[in-house]
Length: 281
Image (tube, rainbow, N blue to C red):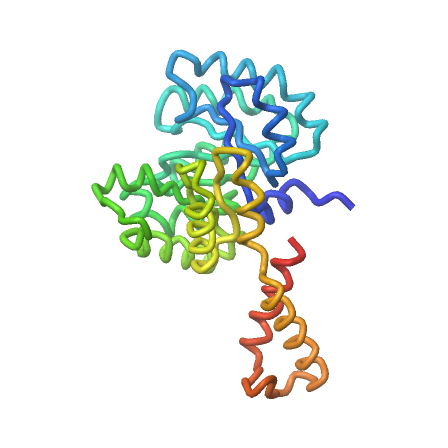
């Protein structure tokens, strides 16, 4: 049975950006293996090409929908005229899976999106100091499905200069993870890895996202998809352990039990079930 669009976006592991003014790349993006494709009207599109990008997306939309991949549009900031124009235009796109909103700094900004697109899930990008400060309100805003970290813009706005491990951004990722849990959102989406030819860097970045409880990553090239999916999946050893934990719990009928010398109680069982759920994705 086909999942509802909300469920597909909630469970997606990879979100591949494609510039809205490059229609020759649209179908390739949808055939890349990405769980969802983000047709971009913001950073990837020059100012003079914004209107043409909307036209290109609108023209290609019916054919793209037939490929069965969730289609998301990243609009321009809603406090700008371009973003308001995007909102008026985007309502004509039948079957829009979600709208990605950049530079979000308040729940009030998202209310404008919710009014214009009342049935469309919202993916707010947290990519400024203001967004971090308003994180709880943003996460609790009606229509928000998942939070998205835009760490590169956040570094620019905050003045933070990161080392290779991006440890300086640990508070941001932790806060996003906590707000996600508090408001019972689908697992957060981490930012891009800009080094498209460095697979090891991509793997390090994706594994870090997983350690923070994130469930997906933004991608900027089709060849990033398979590594992201692989890193977000449980290892063979983790999967085998999770199955044994669930089996031991069933045999013990909910009582605490030892497995390989380790105490297995309810929190361990819950973690095992989450591991199995990751494998199902």
